[in-house]
Length: 380
Ligand SMILES: Cc1cc2nc3c(=O)[nH]c(=O)nc-3n(C[C@H](O)[C@H](O)[C@H](O)COP(=O)(O)OP(=O)(O)OC[C@H]3O[C@@H](n4cnc5c(N)ncnc54)[C@H](O)[C@@H]3O)c2cc1C
Image (tube, rainbow, N blue to C red; front, side, top):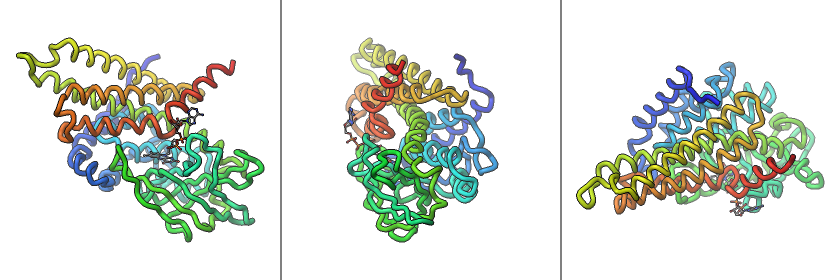
């Protein structure tokens, strides 16, 4: 295993670092307070090629590898996890799914705009009664010959009101169970498609999370991704890669919180010396650093598995499980190291602590990752 980064990867990493510092950091506390979507910043990320990083250049993407994508996710998430989740959803769940399983016509019509950042996309699987148990889809897509009629509600959809293109999972044939599910491309503005209220969230408050309502929405057959009944497999395969992006987001939040805590511990004095000189604080930093490095290896390994054409279901789930736990733990300790200052907004770590929590929940909770991991290790 050699994670030495190439010249190109180092350049991309630096570009993301500079962008986060110069464009995401200013105004971040206000955006978090107001739940303001970072629209201008997302536009600029599109211009930098961050929204279609792994998409081939012929479809408007940057044609890069998964490791480069992970490096960008990590750098952006050190500062602003609300902005990085847009990058994660658009790259991993929307562009990757369309490029891998979409028809040529779908790629030409939708992928090019999504990869260049002209449009952003949303991935719509969760429902009021179907979260971890994604097979319990209540949204229906009734086959009407040349089109489907879609009815139902989706919950918690990232980029819910800002997206133009929505990949919607729905049940066509109840008798076939998960083999009767389809993935359809729905466009904003289709008749009967309504965007529900915005969620008022604990963390990633700048991210735009909504419920979506489908009321007799007519979706042409050519908007189905893959064969009839491929929708559940589509969702699972897409989420397997998505987890690597969220693992990288968690790694970034952990690293951002750790770096702030380390800096603060060398500035803040108590009992006549910098708090870093108290072993209780130094040991916290030692634990944080060690765990972050372990998480980084898991995340990079999963990215490399994907780039090398290996199965990344297990490595991606392990990376997400561990990195999200490290993110939560590190952010809590970063608040502790900041003392009272950790509890106020100006020092950023309280936001990171709130943001870290979501990485243990979305794209499969930690419990679901353990199901994926245990099934994988027990199968032989
Ligand atoms: C901010 C945010 C953004 C999101 N973005 C999207 C999005 O863009 N698209 C999308 O489709 N979804 C999205 N989600 C939904 C997210 O993926 C789900 O919330 C998540 O999968 C958990 O589902 P649930 O909330 O229904 O919890 P539940 O499935 O009800 O789980 C509740 C608890 O039970 C546990 N549990 C459930 N089943 C088991 C089991 N078999 N064994 C052990 N424990 C179990 C869970 O781990 C959890 O702790 C988002 C959610 C949030 C909060």
